[in-house]
Structure formats: C-alpha cells, structure tokens
Image (cartoon, rainbow, N blue to C red; front, side):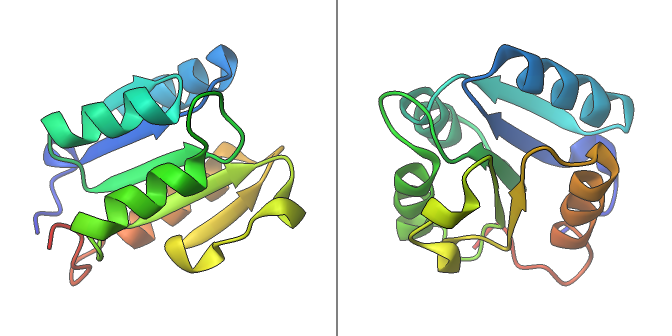
Amino acid sequence: MTTDLAKLGILIVDDEDGIRNILDRIFQSAGYRVECRANGVEGLKCFRESSFDVVIADRGMPEMNGEEMAARIKATHPHLPIILITGLSHLVTRPDLFVAVLSKPFRPGALMDLVAQATSAGCRCCD
C-alpha cells in the first residue's frame, strides 16, 4: 500500500449535505481522492465501481444504514477499514465492523487522525 495521499481514496457516505461537503473539502485539501454519496445504497454502488482505501459512513441514513452497508463491504473486503460516524452511538449493533466509531459532533482533526492510522503502512486495506 502506498503512503502517497494523492493515491489514497476515501468514500464518504452521509445523508447530511453539510457533513459531506465539509469532509470532502477537508480530505481533498489534505491530498486524498474523495468520493461522496448520500446513502448506503449509493455508497455501496460507488464502492463496487471504484477502489477505496477507507470508508467513512454515517450510521443513520435512508435506504440503507451505515452498518448494513459496512456488512456488505466486509463480506468481500474483510480488511478494508471503515469508520462509523454517528449521533447515536448507543444504537450501534455491530461495532466489530469498524476500526472506529466516532460520535457526532466530532473534531475533523480526530477523524483525520483515524483515517491516517487506518491508511498507514502495514494496514491491509485492499484484501
């Protein structure tokens, strides 16, 4: 796995426009390749059509929540790091699917640190 951020891909899946837009700007300005989707169905479709090194997903979304989307991704990519962001962390039923569960509101720096850790050398994200 490369450590060149320009080649690291992040998929952000959240139904809140504001969160998607802020995270998109933050990660792009840090040099990541970023794709954003508004729900789990769109996120899963995007994931299947491209390659990502980490997925950031909201838990509560219409059509397919973040936990269901993560379970489907893990079925084919068991080592891909997925970070869950949620305003209702007490409702998370499958924390084992995630490298981290981050409660909203969160500091963008905390999320960037988690992504950096998940994409660091030695992380087997693309198996």
